Amino acid sequence: MFELRKLPFDPKANAVVSEETCSYHHGKHHQTYVNNLNNLIQGTEFEGASLFDILTKSSGGVFNNAAQVYNHDFYWDCIAKKSQMSDELKARLEKDIPNFKEEFLKAATTLFGSGWAWLVFDPSSKKLEIVQTSNAKTPVSDGKVPLLVVDVWEHAYYIDNFNARPKYLETFYENINWEFVSQAYEWAQKEGLGSVEFYTKELHK
Ligand code: MN
Image (cartoon, rainbow, N blue to C red; front, side, top):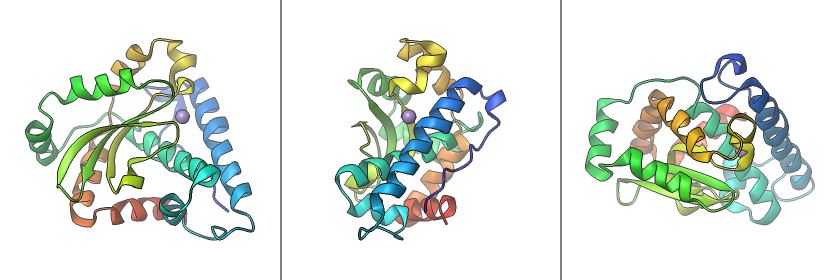
């Protein structure tokens, strides 16, 4: 049985999301993905499997719910607190994606419909990339290691910003937990996708 991870911050004091957004987005949406996943895997080959194994081996409804559990797990860490980027990540970003803020916000703004905008590390090219995924899709499926994600489903911002996705994105960008992103980058270089497996095991023992 998977359980909903706890929020890694106090919902009463987060700069990106209000307590009300947390109560729906974490307490209802994220919880529902966990519940659906638990129900869907019953009696299948995935019953008792790790979240990472389900993420990388399943399809259809099982995949959609497992991926949404992981995507949200990761999103909360990205906005847990405002913090600084490591010098190493900064140098790498300047090299691979010099206009990072502009490019990342463009990817998040122009994503049509529901989905996610990511900064990922590609273990084969050793480069950083910005990726958009629709609905539940996660870059892990393409062998890429997530470093940063923003949820651009309407449920992520509607309560606090109504239809103003760009306003939500500006607030998000100003409050990124770069310490978490920098750590993810460090692990991604050493362990590749293994770092994603480790991350999910820490949250879902
Ligand atoms: Mn969401």
